[in-house]
Image 1 (cartoon, helix red, strand yellow):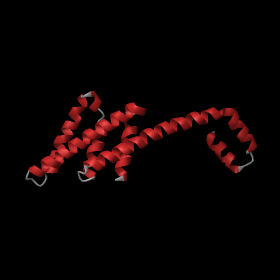
Image 2 (spheres, rainbow, N blue to C red):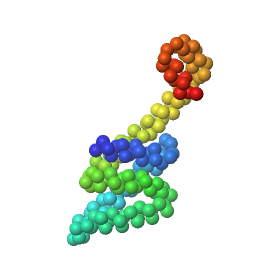
Image 3 (cartoon, helix red, strand yellow):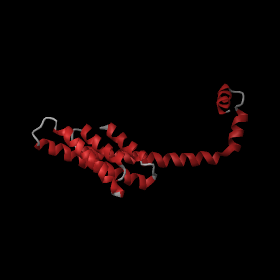
Image 4 (cartoon, helix red, strand yellow):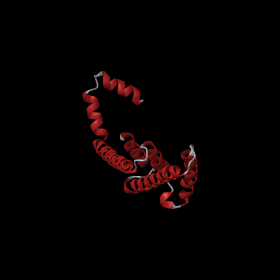
Length: 150
């Protein structure tokens, strides 16, 4: 189930948006994908053809693309992430929702943490870097770093 969490995190970053906007876009489309996967699974139980899941997957793929005309469902990769994760979890849709939500929270949390770390390190500034560099100039590590910095 951990891999589904990472799919939720990946889905958040794939939106290209930050914070709540990216999180909402990812979660809404992930849940939409879960719906489509469950529809395919349930309908394929009714159809007495061995390859019915494959046929239903092709049909729902069409609808996943078609739903992109609706602005809040336009993030197609997120819908496919939800759909594929549900298939991978053998139709355990409740566990899939929980894992994708946890993953999306990981995504937004790591996004915020990364921005905070960047701002913190920018405050150190060039003056602090030069002070550090002069103090440890003799070490080989600094020499190697300087070499690659050029």
